[in-house]
Length: 195
Picture (cartoon, rainbow, N blue to C red):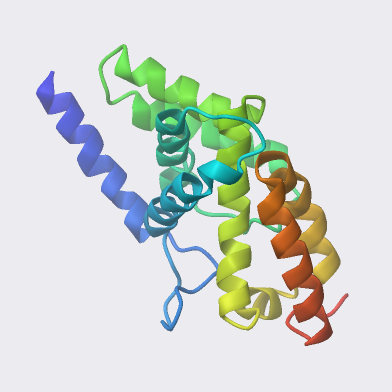
């Protein structure tokens, strides 16, 4: 029913109220996952010629549109945090089932399947989507003199380990560029101090 679709759309408006740890360029406030989703969808689309494999770009965009919806219930976890990943993923699964459950089948099932495809990182589309998702916080930190890395004590080694494999798997040319930039800014002290 149309009312179910509209209830879903109003529910996902809550994503705008979740805060991430990185600030939009030139702003003092933190970004939200809705802004992040819009930006990485455009990033992935722009990166299509550089993808590791040919992709169905419509599918990539759909994967990106659904990938953070669970954060309405779970909140955002900084991309560079790895502790507790299994528990967070389980909680996010419960959240997406609740939120996408507002939609009638088959749209509900399609969105849950897209979320799972993104999470599994197996298809070329999911790998490009992950590359864009992992690259965006790096790009913003590079544009903001390492703002969230310095504020949260994130080391150069941790950034490279956390984002490098996923970006390289989906868009090797992007990883080559970012790897060089990260090394340059490491020399400038743009990262947190090792504990």
